[in-house]
Length: 297
Image (tube, rainbow, N blue to C red; front, side, top):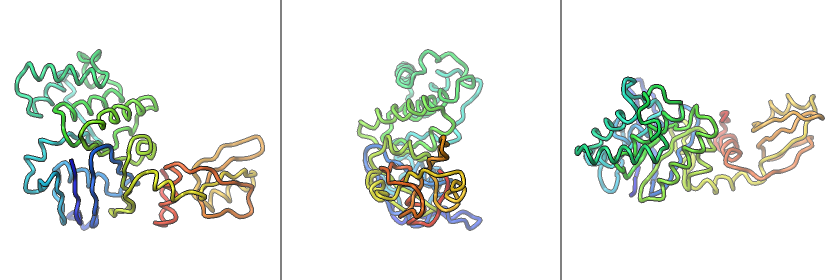
């Protein structure tokens, strides 16, 4: 599978240019789409799942044109939107059965088998008879990914899938997506949570204000922050000054003051040393040094 995005732009009726000349290729495996809120991620996702047409440019999926071949492309897709909703009066298995019908599984026996198998895979089989609106937040997200996967799609798009989940559910959700990505499929994970990208994706893109700021591997982005991440042991009097002077990743109080992680080309006049960067550090450094726009993660 291959998605080719060529000079893609989206301009809304109010004149807002949500996407500007995006040039990108996405191949099999987990692909992360990272960026601050308002970067254009959801607009791109909605275009890719054929819910919205681009204003300019072209998207092809295995040589199918996104605009001309919408019916063929929709058969390949599974989609979990950020605002996933379901009919509250349905039980868990009833909702997934309904989703299977919409996905084109017509024979009742095949559909029943597919529903039970998918409920097992996402850990919801024991809750199959529970009202869907009574599931926990994490279980609802699992039901959402189940409906996206019910017809074995070749392209799976998930938009902000772990927002609001506790750490255990977030890890479970990421592991579920990773296990699926071993097949011949594309999984596009759109998020503003850096940890979701670093732990699952082999390739990624960074959007900022509707433009493609970076495309490549997470490791290559992290490499750009080598020697730029500092751990400073600060006194109480230095604390506020450092927070105003540098992009701060974290600050931890100690018996002697504070331990503060910052990204900067250099620090002057403080008791600090370099530490190994991770993707969160690299994201902050890139936004600050390359784009001159630091936005809190």
